[in-house]
Length: 91
Image (cartoon, rainbow, N blue to C red; front, side):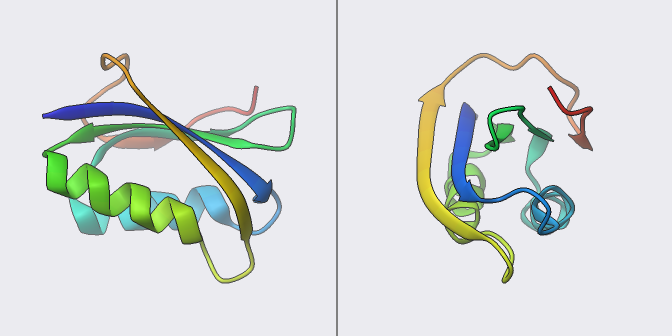
């Protein structure tokens, strides 16, 4: 199992990023959460089999069609959320 926190920068808010990430995670079988941050980035925590998490990170590097991802930061972490994929309140 792999557990990561991801920060996505660029034009990633107001483009349906969180909802598309939720759908992608469901397709890929990845647990965790996603939320907007006040600084204009999107933050996600991902849990799952290494290959599935890697594919989700690849998806986050592109995002939905309306997004323009400039940077993706990935750090290993321990899980803090449920084994589902949730859209959380903005912070």
